[in-house]
Image (cartoon, rainbow, N blue to C red):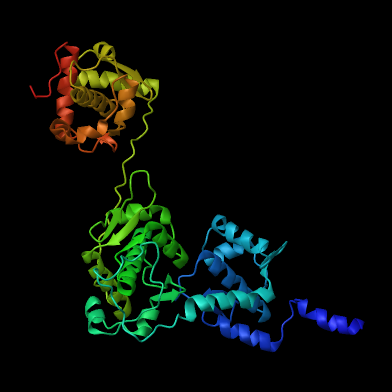
Length: 451
């Protein structure tokens, strides 16, 4: 009786042991995703698929298991080793690793992390279903809904049915590109109504990846579903599922390409926003598909380069050098150094203007104050650029709305850089600033015109 009980109950047991048949089956399911270097046992993941971080981690640990079975490396990997091999920061890996451990998929030991053998096939089946076993696409032509006979496509979901069109209309929409079932499957996969973006968006920058991936998603939705709009949450979910990184900057990137992808906001206070592809965007989406399929480079989009703002050089001058420079500057201007000190309070970290220019206009006061302080910083402290906000604030002069000075012709005449960057007097500005100092010392009203 006891033996019969054991025979029945043993079906519940799991083991780290495997048979040759088990191993052969797992290797076949892994071949599309993993390769192992024969010399050092290094695990190489396929670059043909846009794996998520969790998928990369699982495949790497599976590959490490096989490498150990080959006698090439250990089957346990520390988080540092995983980070170095996958080129993913340890802080990014800590979340997925913790999830695997809590789900009992991976064991955590003192030597590192190890995939559990009886979990490998389940992971591989999931990946094969996602990337290899494409949803069957019917040979019947796609029916593009007419406006008067159909409802507007739901912007919250992609095509819920797998379509494939081979008629003239579909070819025309593809701009002359012959889209067959095979090459369509190489770009997209439809799984239970969910569009999976497989390739074509990878670029050197996040911004370019964001634009290409979003354009491909909206173009696929238009060709499959006849719709031109998807909710932002649907797009983000699809991008995340494809492994597109750094989505926090997605809306900022797409804002620069509003001629192709239009951001449609909901009512005031609503978070329901969507993105709509324009006719020009659809043309570029088809062009991008053509480039991917035919290995061409006709899709060309210029990205605005971020302007690196020049930082002001910190001011620091010791007392002896400061006094020496004040005397030299006064001598060059043929003025008394004591009179100069009555106009400026010279500190080690920069000058303070003791009286502001006699102007009623805020902009004029700011411009002339910046000129006076700027020329002193250059001639006495030996620094060309300066932080306008700080030096005005130190002199108790209004320092708000400096960005508005950029449109002022007088500012443009005397300064070589925009107010938001480190300010710098040009040659004309230096000459006029020296005249302003002389006027100050002689109790004359500062003027913006040369004498």
